Image (tube, rainbow, N blue to C red; front, side):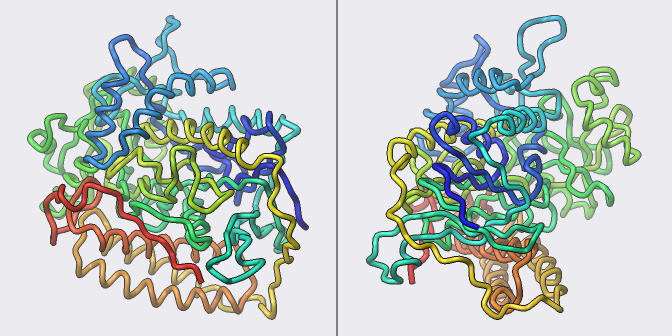
Length: 535
């Protein structure tokens, strides 16, 4: 089956849905998503969206906070663009039906504060902001006749002109569409478009411990890499300081907003340890808090530290954090009476597919927006609640450029070949996938975690190369499954993280290495980039 639309969107979080809703006024839109449409990283975002709104705040303050968190390598033009467009994005979300929390009995919005922010500027919907945004946008998308959503479709590879016409690297390339596996039937479908937009989210599942949902397997980054796009800053993996430590909690995040409302971090002896680590103590940027917790755990040998907000009182806690309170209570933990056991976990990828200020990659007709993109906003460490904002701003920018450059000007008509499974057979060794998945995530956690070394990175790369060969053999010999495609993408992302980390000979932001413990402003106040040689 081949289906064509003006715009093809891969992913159904805030980036993909906001693009689709705007694009539907300019043409037809196809969305493919590998699970149910509401299953996105956006749906699990608790904190909110950073926006200058109060008269006590200013664009200059938000810009400065972003640069400070980004440790010197945020792109000035990107930060300026995103921060100044933020209020309009909030207004648009409100028009789309998103209900942000307001002060009780007042018309004003209840603006929160999070780590790294000098002012209260976080729009939120209690502690379920992402779910509120996802539900509002998805409801509008489902009602729009110009938008078609294909659920349970996993992207396999981007279709490029070069691979169809010639393997000669001198041939001008462009993306024509995508091959996708229909997980309900096992068949592979062909989707083509005037412009293809990757909005696939992050890659937290490359690590053993993560706050991300199971879908966060770096698909868009791996797809773009195989198509020849430049990848940047993959070494900057943000570990959220406070993921609930409980054997049955899986990946439940304790929002940054809890610290924003006055929670303190204490060790197993009940002693506060962030004072003296940073002037903002518990409200320091995430990389600093995560490293401090990691150091405390290594120093004491404890399994976790504790996030204590009991001083705020039960009524405030239950009203401000109803979902966190209810979820923790289901695990037998009452946050109104005791500190929450927490540990750092992989949370957000600041690197990704490099784009310009319009969301364009360096492969024509291919855009990347949201967490899978590297726009230059986050630098070496993302400021809390800037992620959903970035997705909104760049989905709008990407649409503007896609319409200008490609809408109604389909790629030169090519006979796109149907997917050929060759002699691939049903697998009788699915254990290979589960074993390699587990091994990859463990080696990334142990060797490429919060604190790194040259030796650990080298060992990680050696093992990744072995896994790549095993996965490639499995990929070519057996019929495709969603699990296999995700593992293939995770292995690619793992390699990109390690190779970027090996390049950067300094410690900056989220990248800390014991071999180069200091900043190197002369040589490394810049992005790290990787470009695959086209063959």
